Amino acid sequence: MAAFSYAPIPMRYNPDMSTHTDDTSSAKGSVPDSDDSRVLLHCCCAPCTQVPLASLQDEGWQVSLYFYNPNIHPAEEYAKRLCTLREYAEANAVPLALGPYDPQTWEETVGIHGGPYPIIEGASDAPAMRAARTARCRACYQLRFEALAAHAEATACHGLDTTLTISPYQCTREAQSALAQCAESLGLTALATDWRSFYAEATRRSRVLGMYRQNYCGCHYSEQEARLEKQARKRARQAAQQAGLSLSPLQTEGEGPDCGENRHGTGRA
Ligand code: SF4
Ligand code: SF4
Image (cartoon, rainbow, N blue to C red; front, side, top):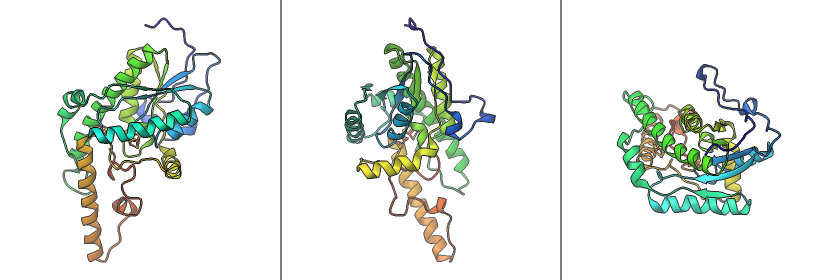
């Protein structure tokens, strides 16, 4: 391909991690004065798609959605997330393209990193678990963003972005880095916006709309990790109560009435 002529799209992702910023407002660029303002937005679920889609559209980008998530397990869960996103895309008249649902590919390229790696704050193996999970999630981002970039190239979208970076439970920098790498390999541009400051707003909007909301990231390992981490928090809370201590919000989150909604564990995912 590469027969297209694009105006430069400002990059939001700062590959220099030492100067990386979490401030999304300061990372926004202006849209070029051309028709080449097409962005393909990788979507992982509908609740997290709302704010990135609206923000990009507000800035003048022509946004198409792309759903390629072979990590999601089981197939019933995949169908629920896709169905919710489809309804949202149709309601907002936004094009939505689907990649194949090929969990076998995920197992062979990502699942080989293993798990579950529950990150129990304070546990001696927490750093090792965090490192192992980060490596697995990086591979998972890479797999999905390679497909995103290929579809973008095939459909003349020059910019790439993802909804994954709205979740504070993801490895934001790994996701941004993987997206940048995949974009660069095909001569595309990664916006790679850090959407985390919009997470609360996305959660609020999805509740208002009554959207289906999941309680784990997607893969079978993440489902186990979320359960194990929740059990650990419960044990910690009970131990603290018995000792007459109170726990910080981080130590207790997930146990209240909002437990489980779009939470991927209390550590990062
Ligand atoms: S990271 Fe989680 S909450 Fe965010 S888009 Fe993916 S499934 Fe949705
Ligand atoms: S926890 Fe989420 S990002 Fe990490 S490997 Fe599993 S599905 Fe992929």
